[in-house]
Image 1 (cartoon, rainbow, N blue to C red):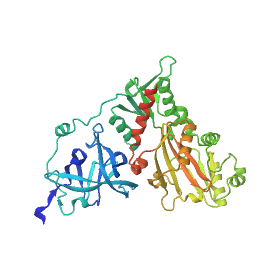
Image 2 (cartoon, rainbow, N blue to C red; image 1 turned 180 degrees about the horizontal axis):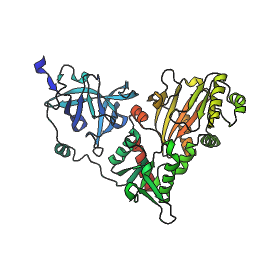
Image 3 (cartoon, one colour; image 1 turned 135 degrees about the vertical axis):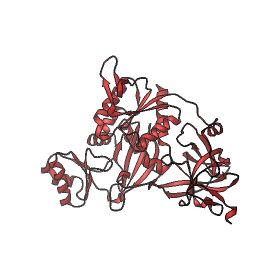
Image 4 (cartoon, one colour; image 1 turned 45 degrees about the vertical axis):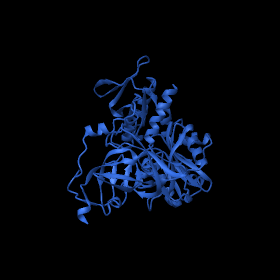
Length: 456
């Protein structure tokens, strides 16, 4: 009956005693079926023959220095389509929730909610038979102050390790850049966003310098993470070289980024290191179009602009006539192009393996949207978890090493000839792969800096 039910507003504070979480703000959403809890570093394990899962949580919104380490009984794994459109496999736990003076067991999925406004989403399955929602109200069970949170989480703040790290990029609001900044702060480092266009250099053999807007000298940095857009590769790499001249550790070197951006050279380099790629042709004369098409096995085939990125400048030519038209059109613009065999059996899917410091830390399968052959997330593709083969992992690690990249997004396609490498990206995006895998990849990048600086 109504009088026995708890009345909640659209936002409420709750706690999870069994997880050691004394207070967390939740979005109360009867439109969502399942409840979800923010979690990173999610890892299943077996305890006394029973499946469990461990994970970390930052329970306070916009505070990544406060970390709770949790363990819970694992009751299921489900494929869930997130609000951002990504299909992801989530672990499901059952634990006690406490709202005001009432408590009961609920099921929750674990997912990275860094891009969401709340660390906790309370769905209707957890509310059924117990709760009524007044969407015009908030905190009907009481508000928790900042002072209360400091007292509740006084022992949950990690020790600072104190590195000074710069993120050299263009857009501070980009998901990948926000996550890297947050991951560094969470691990106790002093993070600085350095806008590439607002940096300028003093070239000097004895005292090289980089200045920032207003004349500020960028000195005393322990490390820099270059995240350089293709359109500003030249200047971004020049700044990275300058930091290297100043003896600052750079997570990817300027030389490695430069060669990764030259698609033709990078493919030649990969082949020289024994990494297989789809049959590829390159030419600079419209007179050779017919032979160029035959070289890669005829139509259908892929035509790629050397300067293209995120699936842009990539065209599928399904017939010989279409291939001739596309190739000649690009050449009339003096554009550098690659012509590549079309791997039909891949069926619009490819793999993105994320390599950090010589290890594959996460993998996803990207699937093209209906009617599209490009699997890029930016082109409407969807991401799901995939387990790469040992051979695919070996190729990804070998490719990153050949390109001398400490951080790389390696794209692989499965063909009848075995796995083939498509591309190596020196500034791979984090949103799709973190969203699908729930892995803290930004944290892995920060760990790589810590490890390499320690070795120096």
